[in-house]
Image (cartoon, rainbow, N blue to C red; front, side, top):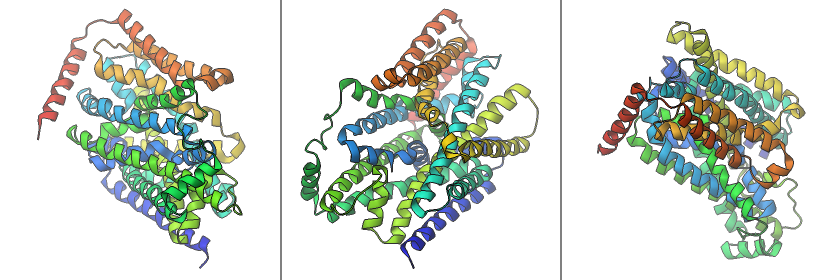
Length: 497
């Protein structure tokens, strides 16, 4: 068999496994809470790895290795910032959000939690946050589908649209039928696949390049400053890179995992697994890029046209074609895990936060699950149409999404968990100011090149949320009761052995 045939077989096995998990999850999904939040039954390992896989996307296997291959270790500051942000998110947001969302009307989405937590009857906060999620994630999903199409086009020479339809079809199928459980279980498997691939390539690659010392010498031969964290950087540049970590507090497709874990006690173990996975995976991505620099220095007759394909190239050079196919599946896993996570959050925003909130029908849970599946289908079709013409995808908007969500939701989520005096007016003002600041700052090339837009967006959102809340605060016995109950349950859960 040819190398390409082996690789296609490996990817086909991966696709079948994803569909099988979708069918299994479909059999376990009974009501809307099951479909949107997995019945709050996830274990620590599934929670941790599914959150990591949903977070990292193709950036982990292509973007980061490509940036370091091209520019050196100065590009690693984003990875450092993300690791710090993820750790703080697990430490300070996960336990409280798990308890508070259950105490406050058993909320199953971020917008419904904020509305219930702040006792807002007008539905303005819930609808506004639902619209923000719907808008950003529709384009985010489209971008992921485009990545899948490009992947098949560049790896196998398939037509772009054929690749787009394959990735979209499989991802939509298991998400539509299996809901949150399917997304979480497939993300767990995908996270494991990404981890193993990222560890295997640099470890085996070091032996290929003659050992650690020989590898380091080859890298220095290309550029003596390539291994320096500070070469080619500025203080503001480092601040901008590390500030990526702020985004974690407001990413709906990540923090929804915290709401779904089976208990607060499990968040500690999940944090250890998740951060361990993240550190080793990021180290593997960085190691892959550095081994790539050494390998191509030692083999000047070979060339790497696109630095972002260094992981793919090394996998095909070092391993048997079938194993290389699994490496390719890992990239596909990174793309698909993010698409599916964003699809289920978008579906929940459309049904739970917009349809149920505005129309207020008394349909059965079975009907709402059907509506949730239809929402996944509708959003997927819109995303597919947007991405059909590769050039028409609004990539700039997608680049705003991390900063947009981080600035719009991050300060509000943190304050809702730790500050009694947060008001619905303060939350709305903070979300709107955060989102607007990110858009204005990010579309100004001079400003965005100077400082990442999440920094001013997050700070201004925080200031407006606090100031407006102080101006509009009125004591509310129900809010006080829920806040105290959350604190009590947290202490009770943590005291259990």
